[in-house]
Image (cartoon, rainbow, N blue to C red; front, top):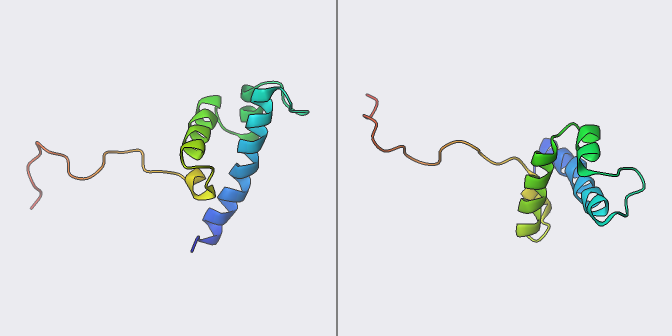
Length: 83
C-alpha cells in the first residue's frame, strides 16, 4: 500500500518521465531540451536523468520514482560503538 503523499509524488513524476522521453526523441511540443523541462518542473537535468535511469532499470514501475536513501547503508566500520 502506497501512502497518499507518495502516490501524489508518483503522479507528479510519471508524466515527467514520459515527457522527458518525448523531448529526447524530439517529439515534445512544449520543450526543446531536457534542461528546459527540468527547469519547468523544478529539478536539475541531472536529477531527471537519474530518475529516468532508475525508472527504466525497474521496467517503468511507478514505485521506482520515489526518493531513495542517498547516505551510507548499514553499519559504518572503523568507528567505535556508541554506549
